[in-house]
Length: 349
Image (cartoon, rainbow, N blue to C red; front, side, top):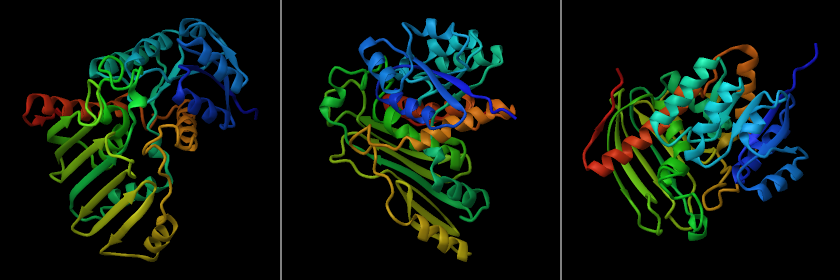
């Protein structure tokens, strides 16, 4: 049986587009056809690096019968328009995080792909690190007993140069700061493991940079399960520290730092637990704490490969539009709570 090759086009030519291109290049049933973007110099440079075509606009790219799947790697607040137009041309779309900067814009993307019968997926590449399957299994198998607390910490650093003359740190195209751009990965992991948030109380501040959005945010959460939690995200924590998630309950505690387990302990400890801890007890990662380009491309490749598999099998993609929306909803709730100086209560009807 001949293996189908899925042809990709990338919209955007910045740093993250390079990760998309490298990821596609390393997927056996994927091929990069071309790249487009608003900066033609960057488009030509990236296309030359990956030996693919350049397109003058995404409208031109979407008219190509050769392309099956579009990846969107534009600034966050510019995801909706190409995503909707791609649906009209019958192209599947996998979009960099966050899916968009408002729930209304995300919903319009979802509706467009539902109407066209194409798939819309999000990129949350942390979900494809090896440690997550073990942590998810521990939650699913109730090894924590009654989970009492769960928290994520993203104490990162970005220099002034990162924001200078950039769309980063702007309301129009970033939609916020440290939470919606950097910490959203871990917020997605938190809700993926813990389920819906019932309510939260939050504070945001701009303390280390001259930008119009937050560089520091903290929130206390109450999950629908009644467990309590914390979200902390910053780009004003020099020199940048490893991201961390903690989950604890009446029968167990796990502390994960980057992609390693610093604590993996349960009341019903088994030999398998020792194997997991021994395998993942050393620090792995560190990418992104101060340099957004210092991350591996392999999780992106797994994320995109899983999206291809969902198209081939007809199964629902794990991070479909509705799933990718959840982390944005939490981030926007944090912003609203901080702005209005009162708790935010979610409506899960």
